[in-house]
Structure formats: C-alpha cells, structure tokens
Length: 311
Image (cartoon, rainbow, N blue to C red):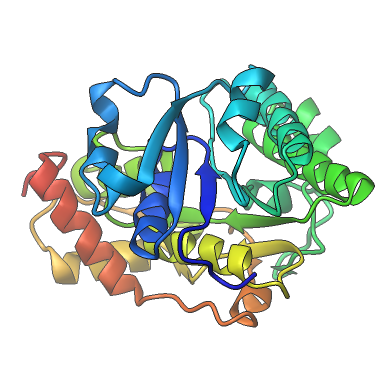
C-alpha cells in the first residue's frame, strides 16, 4: 500500500510504548491518526499531545477493547488500523479485544489491518529442539501454554491465530508483526515490562543472573516495521521483528564498557537458552535495524533523564 499523504489510520492503545513511537512516526509522514485511549483527558497521554503535528493530525478517542461500539466509532473513516494495545488483564482483552477490533474493521471496510502480536506466539512449544531457528511457520502450543499457566503466551498465541483465521474467512487484508524484547527510549512516562528488564540489570545489583539468550529489537525499528508492512502491498501473513541475539553476560559486559558505574549483576549462571528468531522475511521487505549500542545508549540516557536510574 503506497503511502498516501493525508490518509487516516487508527492506532489502538495509543499511550503505550510501541504505539507512542508508531504515532510519532505516522504523524511525521503525513498521516491523520485516531489514537484509542481509556480517558483522553488523562495526563499520562500528555506526551502524545506534544508530538509534532499532533495538534492538527492526532485525535485521541475514548475506547475500550471490550466495548464493540466504542471500537467501531474509533475505526470508522479510517483507511488502516494498527492494533497495538497490549492490556495488562491478559487473556480476555487480548482475545476478545482482538475479535472486536477485527469485526469493527470488517464492518467499517478498513483497507488494511496490522496486528501487533509477540514472539510469545512463536516460542512456547515443547517440540522445539535446541539450536532451532524460529521463523514465521512456528507457533507456540496453546494447549501447552494453558496447562503450564503461561497466560501471556497463551493469549498472544490464540489472539494472533484467531486474527489470521478471521481475516482468511472474511477476506480482510491483515498482517501480523511479532516483536521480541522491545528496548529503546520511552516517550511515555511509565516503564513497561520489557523496559524494566534492562532497568533492573542496571540498578538492582543481583547476586546472580541466569546467562540466558535474549532477542532484542529497538522500539523505533518496530514502529518502522509496522509502517512498512502497512504500506507495502507485498506484505502478507506473519512477520517476526527482531534484531539482536545476545546472552545476558555479554550484554552486561557491553553496558559496562559504555557505563561502568551502575549496579550490575555480580555473577552469571548458565541456564536454558531461549531460541533464536529470524527476521529474514521482514528484512526481505527492506526493513533495517540500528546497532545494539545505539539502542542501549539511547535507552540509558533516557532512563537517566527520567530519574529511573542513578549512577
């Protein structure tokens, strides 16, 4: 889908980490944006109102994922929808909310829908073997997730699978993007779960940390990926969005070289390695990602400015 200056899109969960950066990017490229939030007057959305072009091109809309009429009102008149909202109350909003979004998009005749899923929908499967590289054909085992009470993995897996099935049955043009751990500077004021992982490595001084492998992608590169799959008509199906694979000990070593004075973990124990994921399909569309050191430096500098860490 070629970019159209002035085209209108809806972004759900507008105040969130990824959604905030996506809105910033879309506004800078001429899009009009409907951003769904629970209470448009809340101060926690002030960062959105301060974005360039927000005054004339950003409309914050009161909506609840579980209230179909509010979602339909938000997406009406939109050419595209980015479903980015990732609620805390995991299972019902993730699954029911996604259903409501898709039904509303179908009813409103939206041209293209981009759903943000997660690597959690790919990696939780007892059949994966050591050293296996995970690609878009891989799925977490929803029954295994349910019986082991991995509810976040379960909700992401079921929600994405249902989204793709709904799109197929209703001829809805839909693409899903599955990011890994998302780091980078924040626009919003409250740290999210993935950001807290890095903050804790910098300030908690753990006696021992598991030396597991982590797959990382910069939040700004995730925003670029979402815009790319929306605008590119060749984009179909699922896309893994990941950039760097690194073990915790090496990651801390890199951070120490950049910032030697933080309260880092004191030792590491070898643990179960996470699987490596491939973003080859996304890169085939022309997606590029920034160096890990840029992500780390920009993150730490922002945390310092926000008072989240102290050297």
